[in-house]
Image 1 (cartoon, rainbow, N blue to C red):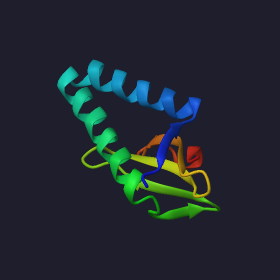
Image 2 (image 1 turned 180 degrees about the horizontal axis):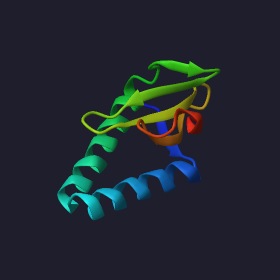
Image 3 (image 1 turned 30 degrees about the vertical axis):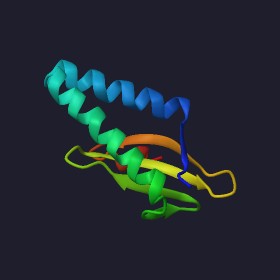
Image 4 (image 1 turned 90 degrees about the horizontal axis):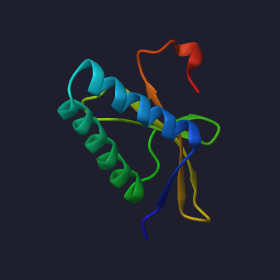
Length: 97
């Protein structure tokens, strides 16, 4: 059975900020591509949820093409993947969630 994806409020804000950034600084087409890659990553997580473990029960999955990683936890019992952050990899590492 596939896992369900849930976003924290902060992760939702991260997505909106990234899309807005690409619309403003690049183009709506690039923003759409970013969002498509995020949806592809969600599909991957639903079927193969245990990628690189980074701290305690947190895992990360890099987005293809874009410099972002998805930071998430897996709740095996309830079959939920909770996405905590969509983190831009060039940000200050001290801000790393």
